[in-house]
Length: 56
Length: 395
Ligand SMILES: Cc1cc2nc3c(=O)[nH]c(=O)nc-3n(C[C@H](O)[C@H](O)[C@H](O)COP(=O)(O)OP(=O)(O)OC[C@H]3O[C@@H](n4cnc5c(N)ncnc54)[C@H](O)[C@@H]3O)c2cc1C
Ligand code: SF4
Ligand code: SF4
Image 1 (cartoon, each protein chain N blue to C red):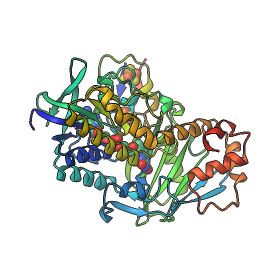
Image 2 (tube, rainbow over the protein chains, first blue to last red):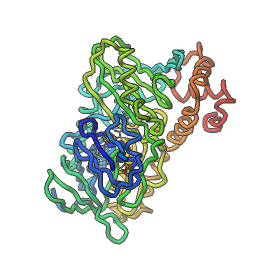
Image 3 (tube, rainbow over the protein chains, first blue to last red):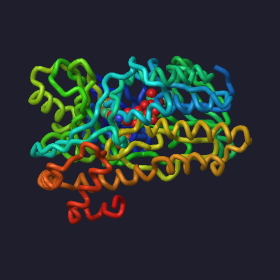
Image 4 (cartoon, each protein chain N blue to C red):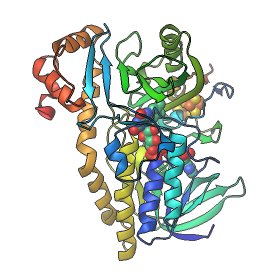
């Protein structure tokens, strides 16, 4: 499961650019993750502020 | 909003606004959409730009110039400093902008030239027919999705670009090809207001660098960018930045936070398709070494706007016709991106010791009339062994 901390997220869109399946969408001040996410963790890795986590 | 235009530009950053302005001035019917409700806000930028490259497109206006800088100083891990001058140009400094106002001024200019601008309007997909892009689907002010048609769609949708992917151009970045960044606007600090600073080394910014760009009035953008592959819990840009600012500017007041990613992949293979072009960060046209992307985005936008106008008047918007744009921007700054990528790829492998040695090798030399390119040439000449791989590109 992928978890986004909306209170941490700085809505910068960096995570969108590394998602191999295009599952992330930045909308104004939050991100949405579609169920096509394969939990590769790329988005969590590069987030400058640590707002995304892949939960076991 | 109408249901058909000559050109739809998606994204109202510098790339989109210059594209829209150029095409509108050529008599095209242009719609530029921006998904945010406020153009230019929030900022994701350190705001440094070479004066000469901006002046080509817009008359300087003190409202969006926060500071003017004469040069920059690069610090090796052990504190050895190398000074570079700005007036030979080529460096990414000159003005430190107020991007919130700058981006709006550019969008304004596009609107004045005749482009229609719509905010809080998000492209959600492309209309594809017979292998051609024929427009977009979009949500305007949160209402139901609508179809808007056009002969050409231009993706100026920044780092998070989807337009290319929807048209079959894979713009996905590897984590190592994103510089992940955090920046504070720090107020009430004693810094040189006429110079930008860059700090290297594993302690401040592993495989990246830290910057201090003056914004006038005892304020500065203090930021860190590191390679996405080296970004680890506890050592993320935000953590590194907090450590640095706490130690270096204990009395500074943080009045803004910026986070963001810079594409650092170097040029992508293809930036056009039938009825489609990509410009700016969407086309990964950012300098991989300096992270500078504003001026390239504007150059590319101006070429794209012209080629789009010509293609439409000729009634041929095929990939082959639009290729003129792809060739045009590569001609303008493609080589610079290649070179910067090679330097970046070499520099991220250097240890603190290596970096110190490089700095010592040019210590005492006069770089007051030299830019980044000149410095790199000198470094390669003085350190042929460690920088061997870069020799061909520079000397
Ligand atoms: C921390 C940081 C520091 C930087 N420092 C510098 C610097 O000092 N100097 C420099 O030259 N460059 C710098 N850059 C790079 C620079 O900010 C970018 O290269 C520049 O903004 C690119 O302009 P653009 O128009 O291509 O994209 P952007 O300015 O990102 O604009 C893209 C726009 O498209 C919109 N959009 C996205 N998707 C959609 C959609 N589906 N529908 C509608 N609209 C959409 C976005 O909301 C956005 O407004 C920095 C970047 C970062 C992250
Ligand atoms: S990279 Fe992090 S801060 Fe930026 S939009 Fe994604 S989750 Fe939010
Ligand atoms: S975990 Fe991987 S697939 Fe899932 S949203 Fe993040 S980048 Fe995309």
